[in-house]
Amino acid sequence: DAGITQSPRYKITETGRQVTLMCHQTWSHSYMFWYRQDLGHGLRLIYYSAAADITDKGEVPDGYVVSRSKTENFPLTLESATRSQTSVYFCASTPGQAQPQHFGDGTRLSIL
Amino acid sequence: GQQVMQIPQYQHVQEGEDFTTYCNSSTTLSNIQWYKQRPGGHPVFLIQLVKSGEVKKQKRLTFQFGEAKKNSSLHITATQTTDVGTYFCAVLQTGANNLFFGTGTRLTVIP
Image (cartoon, rainbow over all chains, first blue to last red):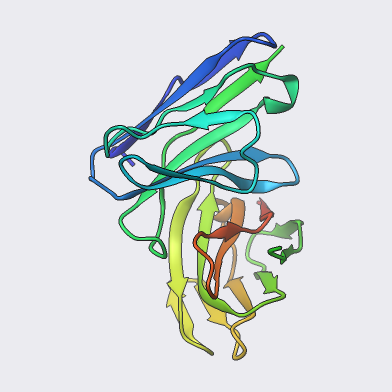
């Protein structure tokens, strides 16, 4: 979907480093989400946001920080990366809680 | 906690054969959505079901929502190589705030 973009697409970093994944959407959707995808686990929700300045934890929030100062942006920060955070990260947005979600192309993150 | 089981985890079929994946919840669902993720791609929304017993069709794909609103199925008739990918159900349990994704069924179609 051209309306939601993630950057970078690929990232390699070392344990203990801070890394920020960016997500930008142009639809003015209220809800935004961060998921991680690992083999055997499907998509697991890390954090979500219902509106600017409102964020909440999902299923696996430990080790992650989010912010949402503007409706269109929802960055995800790993403050001190660990190998267990190696994964593919997807950002998604939707206008309503129960409505279909639109996903970005994902960021493949490797932590050495 | 949320309990959503999706089966099978993997399915290999010959092109032209049918395919079905099932999504089962331990609690009543308000809403179920189905997504498809092509290899190397991102999940793409297919359909949403909200009514008990609902059946929806999209060309060769048939989606059903159980009468008790605890399970759903996706059936593909006469699979094609373009059907390859992982199919996820995503459920919204009654009273919950967010969708919960199943672990997916990875479909391989052998030409």
